[in-house]
Image (cartoon, rainbow, N blue to C red; front, side, top):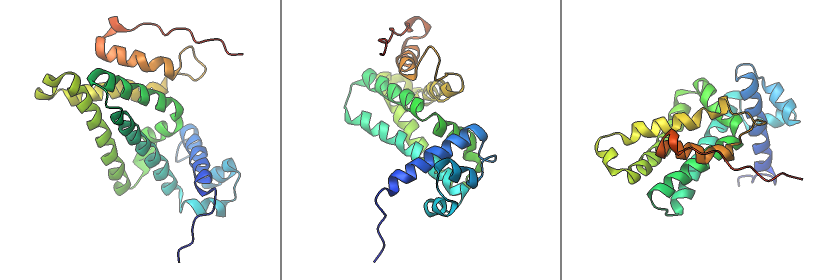
Length: 206
């Protein structure tokens, strides 16, 4: 009979992935040792190897967890059964805010995926293509003629160009938050520069 996982296994695993993503994002995959990961997680090295067999599997789990989470966001929005433009705006909003909450994971996926095996890269690419296709179909739902001209996917990639690289310049302690940026990205995509308006001031927190 197979042994079940101990209570708290998934919580510990998430903490390990978060700590490793933070280290990889700031020091680089090549510049981070498993000793450093274990120290950051406050676990022993043998305990760390209970969750992953090596550093490459750790990287694969970080990337896979991130892209699968994005795929789930697509499903969540699809379940709302919104009309064309509200549906695409909801997708944009969810993704921009998700990237804000997973900046380390997104940086790792963007910069370190090259260190994965070909098999792991292809598995991630399959999910990423499904996400892109869902966005492309959402674009085509708003402008059906774009699909006929085979422009819905290029426009989707331009949209992702805005979303994907926000983490490189938007500072956590800056004047704008990811929550502020989400509607601005949607407005810019739908209406061009003339459609963008400044976010309303957030209430002052006690």
